[in-house]
Image 1 (tube, rainbow, N blue to C red):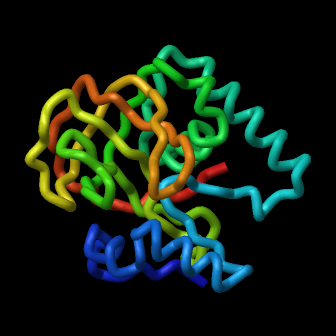
Image 2: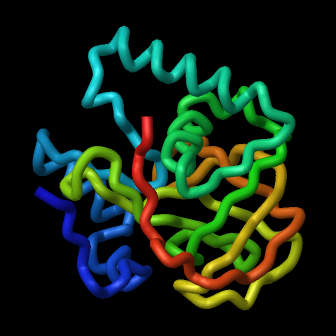
Length: 189
């Protein structure tokens, strides 16, 4: 059997229609105890026992913290994002760079937006929009779905829609890029 993806590219239209509204996500999860909503932070923990998952995360932490800077590409994007979200303190003030499409989202100011990639962790059922909030030094005039490359230092911020502190990137360099031939990322062990 093969994996079939839609001919149309997933973009911010799908993000909006699928409920990348944090209030909507909370409502879905509150009404369905089995809901597995994947957004921003990839989560592979459901595929491992606790011990196996902890071992995997420790290996991946060593892999990413051993580098002077973290460059997330197609083959390590989901792995890197999951590691950063699981161990944000290990990456504070470290240079991180990655590509994705812009999505303004909610509760962000004129200097902020989300940079996302659609990713498949194990199967299409656990796919989602993964990435992080980024903050530019000046107001940005980017539209949803513009592909950009960002590079900057990792920091953290209290994000009201999550009612939690999340990692975010203080952008030092950025540029627009062409949409990749395959805009999806896959979790490669």
